[in-house]
Length: 76
Image (cartoon, rainbow, N blue to C red; front, side, top):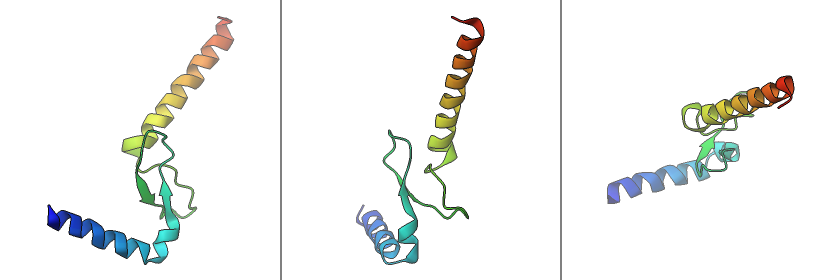
């Protein structure tokens, strides 16, 4: 267990002392507590990962839009 904590501490010190620290962001999913380093060209990444949070949010937004469209079309 100490070895794992030591590795995490070393990685944290490396990140805090690097230029990449400024690119550290919090995931846009309100239920997620992860931080990530945004290395995308535009710097506009919002999710810790698509599999973990991005796809879930995008799928939920899609279902919500489709439901709203259905309501508008049927008037119900």
